Image (tube, rainbow, N blue to C red; front, side, top):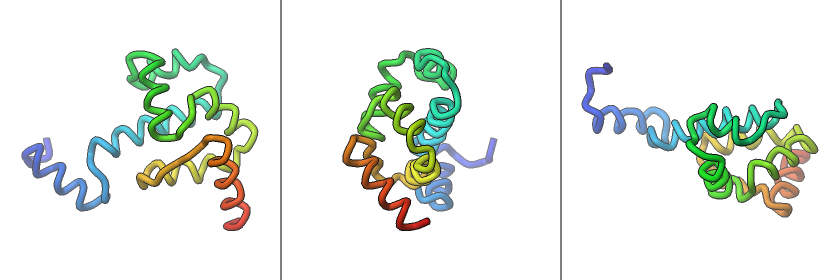
Length: 116
């Protein structure tokens, strides 16, 4: 579609965005899932399927890898501290480490207070 080979397109994409195409797609899917978790009460199983994760277990594995917590823990944290949401989305898109374990989100909350 773009007129480039897949290899060249991925190289050009990385040059423009600073991240790989696969990372960008994964990050965008996770951003959409986090938005859904933050704004709805839908079951996590349904959210996983809606955003292309074959099972809730696969979504949970991805959350543990990127956020160091489960989707349920993420939902609870965001409901309690909605001001963290924009910081989390920004970090996710830039590939920065996000730690939403109890120590991690507390430090993010303190960082947010300093920058605002």
